Length: 435
Length: 162
Image (cartoon, rainbow over all chains, first blue to last red; front, side, top):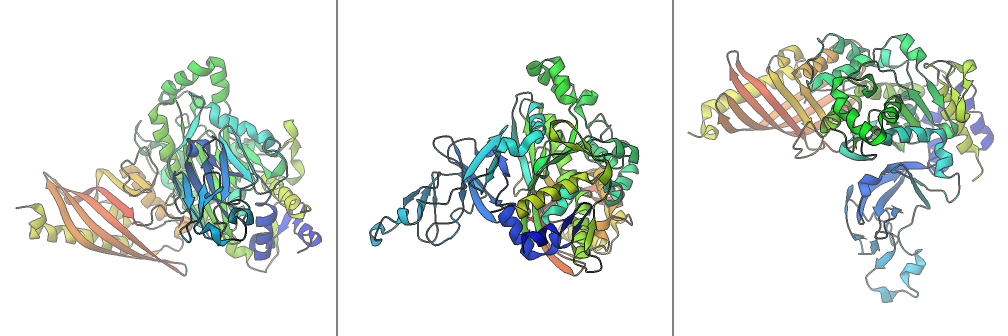
């Protein structure tokens, strides 16, 4: 598909359905978007000490993220330099080397070839013939402890790439009384038969909850208000919050930035969910935060109210609610989302239990909320396969987006589809840029 | 006599578990809910051997109130992921009385669940543990734990009761 025909797929207020359904376009996306952009891989707390590693994907590349003996984080392609087998099957662990099961080729935690059987059988050292070991992902960087890598040798720095969205990561970390967060509490891996873009388009879509989540909103409304401290309190309150009236959604801030990123201000008005609203459940936490930051700064940090922040093309996170989701495209119509919870170091343990209860209802594979999102992605994918009409309409709020500070645009209202249009502007840029 | 050797007790418990499965397979969720005590928990851990439902996430961890919300949500006409609702067969096997203590009986079993929804059939396998309580209304579930063999896998949404 040439540049001209790709350009024809994205128009000011609509996109062609092929961007969700065409397998050839998906292959191009893997090269041109996932092969170029900075992709989030995880968090430094997953590779704290030398030898610690975890495996993940960068687009279709299986990779190993390791902490090498020199303290640096390395990202290695999980593919033996000899005959191509994956060298690491564990999802996480600690090791000094990776040994291929097939012929015993052995690599250090920096990917360097450290040994192989029968080394004399080669005309020149085997390592020289295979580039020294496991292929290394060329660029690795981190921001506030969050690990990123890019499969491209060249491109914008991570700081340039993140731009104003860095403030969402700042918010994530500054909320911790000890100034640090860590991955904890298990990983949900939820899958759907649909294109990877559908989930990223949904997370800042404020019109969908009233419809997609109508059943869980209704079910929660039938329940009497929970007694303080009941386990179900957090989950039920979050379901109720999804039923906020239109005026709340309309007045919620929604910003977009370069490279397809966006974030949404918070729409919660339930003091049990939002630390800034001074519910007694947060008293101990506030004291801990104030001890480090002082009263004024702590109030500023807690007053930074954000819901989802999206780092295009593979991440959506909730700084305020300590959730981070990594999007893994598997095929044009198959996606897996890994959802992580984080612990605020220095916060009372009860805060983390709230995080877990929140995660179960927002990101759980059997959640009465999430399962309806997944269902709708699948229905969208099926509908988009139909040739009845070739276009997807993204015109809501189109004429009213307003330039705002730091080069951002702000949606005319919180229900604007500006975040989706912005994602497709980035999509088009990646897909049509010279290799 | 050890509880495990009490044939009458085991038979009573088997009938109870078969009845529970029958309710689930015939979409009698309100009656199923009534099998649980007021302080019951229903737990599908995310990790194998997960020790704790409060400091680590679970596929499901419901107290009685969340379980009621779940059952109610399932029955709403716009519970999209259950339109159409899955049809299921819960095959309960290997029933074993683990321990009887006071009013409570701990029971282990296996579950093979076949689920059909919208042109797709899925098979689930799980180790199940019930803590059953003898009450004035008969046996009730005080706790149910379902350890799916693939709990840590990349899973499509789960919209049936395990």
